[in-house]
Amino acid sequence: MTQVAEPISATHVPGANYALLVARAVRVLNSAGVMHMSGHLAVRDAGDPNRIWINSRKASRSTLTAADIVPVDLTTGKRIGAGDEPPSELPIHLAVFRRRPEVGAIVHTHPEHVIVLSIVDIPLMPVHLAAGFLPERAPVWDDPNIINSQERGEVLADHLGDSTVLVIRGHGVVVVGATFEEAVARTVLVAENARIQANASALGSPKTLKGDELARAAKQMCQPIVMKKHYHYHEQTAGQLGGLDGVGG
Ligand SMILES: [Zn+2]
Image 1 (cartoon, protein in one colour):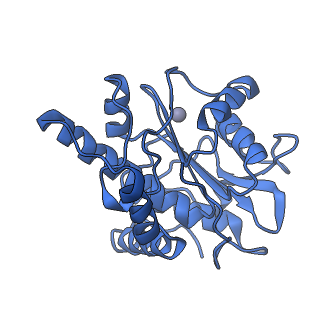
Image 2 (cartoon, rainbow, N blue to C red):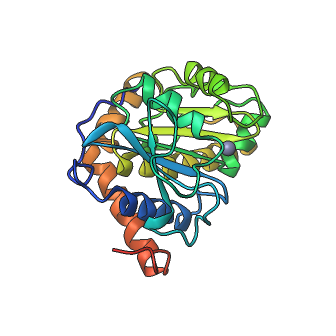
């Protein structure tokens, strides 16, 4: 199973403006068509590993700014300071960050074709060379419900294990990365891979990447520098489309 143990990237560093960084990354995910109206991104502060930053429950993912990003204490699970509250599914992020110290960022969202595969019991599997970070069969939590309690967060983390991705049937996906660039790039690639896999499954029996093929794909296509290139592409595209207008910075 693919591990995430790459070093923190140059932009994911102590002292970074995490509120702005998360706001921009959420807008990038939204412009790439994978954020959905209620998705969220949480990033661990490299200067204080007990602090995470997440988009607020109420702010629109299409227009939020740095002021809509909420700092949360990982130990207590409470917001730091006064202001808007984090999303109701914060327990996803608390449970996974507490168990996985190598994880620097987590995306939870609801990509259509991930859900399509999950409701016909087809496991998400790597079919696209660029998605070589996926395990041969992504784990699935067969429980279509929201994750709004500590107890459910712990069960989710059990199902995720050391995977890069967890599918939740009829609901969506959790994607982790060492950095926010990696988590964002992987999320877009998970949605693409799922779309390709679903289309191929309608035509026949897809050939999936396994064993040595998968290891080669991970090595050639999924290194941190490649994930940064993906992120840069999506960030530049978002900017050209106006998706970053008014975000600040
Ligand atoms: Zn959800």
